[in-house]
Length: 227
Image (cartoon, rainbow, N blue to C red):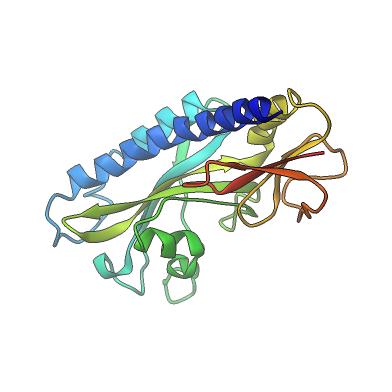
């Protein structure tokens, strides 16, 4: 059983590795476009991120979008800044995603208070979710991020959204290779995928009575549970 669990865990990690390859490209592009550690970020300065996101959503059908979210000390705190692009249609074109704004023009989404952003400030990669995306997409997503640091200065995080509807299909195919019932659980204790009909993605999962196996603990912190 351990060998089967190892194989399943490695397969899950390979899916995340593919996404993180594109996130690394976003990261590198931000570093190239903002070479001066004292530079202030702007859309003009960050041209080209959409091209990387387009490549990513074209290659990986269960990725919903991606981009870069800026640290507040490199932008105006009252006008939080991000360059985030989302899949626009079945042909994998992308459109820029704008967060909801208040009547005064300030972004209402205080992303700097989110766990994934705070972990980025500490230099950590994060695989956060599943959760319902706030910005009008209205989908259950998993957010993968990594910090962008230039000359010791935290500029923000590069990342991508995994759409759970599509990602779950990939994961269930892997879980079905295991004997018995199996559940892939996120770091927050919510179901990502399951071969149990009554356990839907996003639901809280109680692992008592299940055999648990860590998956990608250094990055995702997921758990593979079997019974």
